[in-house]
Image 1 (cartoon, rainbow, N blue to C red):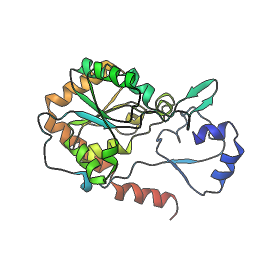
Image 2: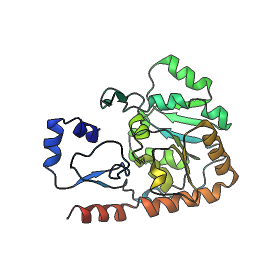
Image 3: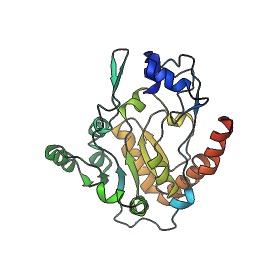
Image 4: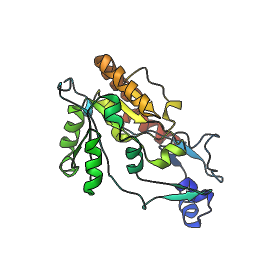
Length: 253
């Protein structure tokens, strides 16, 4: 959003950014020459979600009845939606979840979404496609409840915000990094993140329902290997000590 505001020459945003001596983004493709939004003289530095992997690590395998889960706010569109070059880019994930609503049936796997869908018709539509829906309020009461929810899951299935997907930003979710740290494989919508780190297992990007089904098949075929690979990837890519050390050094602190 900030990059588009700069490209559209929003004075307030430009003045705000100029008051900083270092600018970081979780969109790892934003600094690249291939990123479609002009930087207008600003230098963006890529960083990653810092995760204390030991906090999430568990030696327990998920129960046989465990399913792929995720946690999301349902409708945040309007807050940071933005137009650029005749296209509107949405901040919400809701449209992306609806695009892949048939995923449980296609993959022949149960998916659970903890979210705040208020419309009964929308909830019923998800349930008809094989989704289990849970309220998010109880998970936000304490961080241990949130951590336990992730640990009890088989893995994560999720999508990304429209802005991140269509602009090919390379963004990756902090929550997905927590699933990886817990040894829970992640199936997530491709934002271009695979350009920056390829996984030998445990992490799958997708563009289509067929790719979702194939990722589920591969995880179920050798869950132990993908669980180990997920945790190893989190330690390599998202470990807080490594991420923050790099950030502070590049910020000149």
